[in-house]
Image (cartoon, rainbow, N blue to C red; front, top):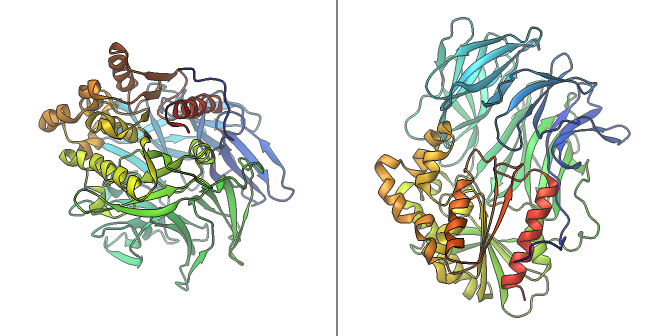
Length: 593
């Protein structure tokens, strides 16, 4: 099947990591507007926008260090082996880590701006140790080593300790204070059962932490942790997860968002008065909150179905917002974008499964429908701008994005309903969704397609192998075709963290063999498109190529896109255009009206 020749949509441009300059008059952030992620600078006084970095690889993050230095992280063509650099104002890059075979995770700068902390798997591929580095001499000192996945979060206000994290699984971790002189760790968050501790911030005295946690609860709430007694005090909590906690430089105000069934609501907390404020945003997701130096503004990234991702700003006095950037805005599409309707359907065991259902404008007759599955699995379908989905909607397709069991955002219990040998229960949720779409969603039974990426790709392959009669077409993006093979070949450190979710080969290998889509490739009935980046460190490209090979051997219709300069996601705009165009043509060919 030909996959070239159409350019069906306006691409979204990624925007992330807004940081105010010290005088509050400029804002830097990362965007791929020029083709792949680079640093851009917005003059907030005159409104002038300019690209300020011109590296040859993707910039993953940017951070300003006391004294005016700019620190960035880059990988090589999506391989996620991040290296750290100082970026000079003349564009010169000074390598800090310079160990391209290893991963380096930035962990904050010292209060005087002379040191940075980072973690790396230099000693062993499966373990992350902690290091500090002098920015004048560039000398590196290992300060903590153990067989586990450890990361630095930030320096203590007195500069004598690092706040560190030990990652036990995707949904369980611990925080501790590493004393730099002695090397001793004072673990702060001992707990029974699963608990996660996110976005910690020291108070002004340095004797408490403000953080988000779900310790002993279903949902993440806002708490204070006394560092001397290790006691938690709950400040705010509810029946949805709190996300993205940040703190202003005066240490008297917090900001976060509430994930209400996937839709964000922004919240401000004044610590002295305990007053709580919210502000209005359209349907969408708030992320990357950042207070301005003068505590008058709050920048954030907003991404919604009708609002492609941009930097927005909240006036803290009036609680009114304005959009600062307009990277993805297209007047042509303004009246064509569509918001979803939150729905719920009952699965095989009567469990309610939430989803977002997008209907095309002015539908006529039975609808061709695309079921869109999120990755993770500890993730969530949320109402954000997706160019390929909006293209389908404009061309008469409906789209349904379910949050099958195992998704986050609906409580700790719900997240574990697909663990290990419950894996296929989540796939059965899709069977129930198809029935709902036929009876309640006006679906054409012969024109239901499924697509998803990463773990969503596994779900696609599991659905079309175990329930092949339901699907008219399928798209698998960087998906797992065999859990057994995935655990054997993914990064060693990642395997350890993923085993609580998937199981182990030693204990569960026979079960993997019984469900792995690769073992049932001969059952697939619908045409399949597969896309993968050659440098993917999470799901090795062999996961796709084994499936493609099996289908080609039986002369089954399969379209394969391999990107040599991408990893687990497609970051370069040229590749996004190729992939999205191919997907649009594939779906149009097989289930279009």
